Image 1 (spheres, rainbow over the protein chains, first blue to last red):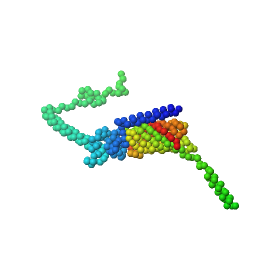
Image 2 (image 1 turned 30 degrees about the horizontal axis):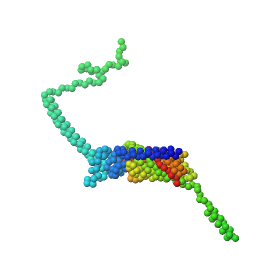
Image 3 (image 1 turned 90 degrees about the vertical axis):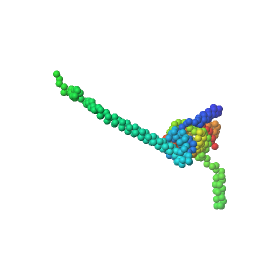
Image 4 (image 1 turned 45 degrees about the vertical axis):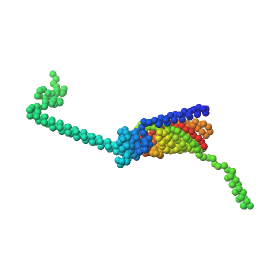
Length: 163
Length: 165
């Protein structure tokens, strides 16, 4: 009796030990702020630099901010930036994105303008040499078309004459 | 004569008080517990193995109602990260089993509070020592350690030793 109980207890402790060893493996997502080192917080399953105060449901960079370079720069004293590195990183990202969009918009407008100019020039030259042709008539729905004449479709069955 | 009677009554009362044994009803019976627990936990960003936790506490039961157990423990998360907390428990003994409800919280380095339930099977190893094993589920929904408002769910397996004093 004693022996079986001791074996059972030993097995339970071995199981707990194995589970504990597995918990030491790396690569698990962080679920709590205290899973991360000091001066870092858990956001979207990854540790990022920033204050642990407040709720981080939205607006926190995930993998990109965890690379270390940009986030590390925000916490250095030389740049005198606030400790909220995640937000700073996000702001920088949004500025970069807007800059890129503006540049794209400028390029697009220049391209459109040059295209419009060339198109208008081509049109004026074409009008001088070839008179414009009228567009073909569009069929009216619900009418039968016989050349220039359009008639309504067959009369209803109630109005048909019976022989 | 009157003084002699008074002296006699006084001696009788004092002797009765000296002989009377202290009342034994409603004494608290303490049981110390030392347990190790581990399992899995699920939070806002996934599921993983939980931290290994060492629990050192004491259970109290009134001798007239030994099936009703009040307890408190200190919690030490030891691996892979450290934290310190405590829990308060109320349990009902059902034979070798004990069903418990608990309030649990961690206070260092961050705070996290929640509730849980546990089932413990006690294997007596003598008159005052027993091995205790069983599952425990906990959910944490308050505190600065939680990155989101999503509660942290834990399913643990506990094992340890209980010693009656």
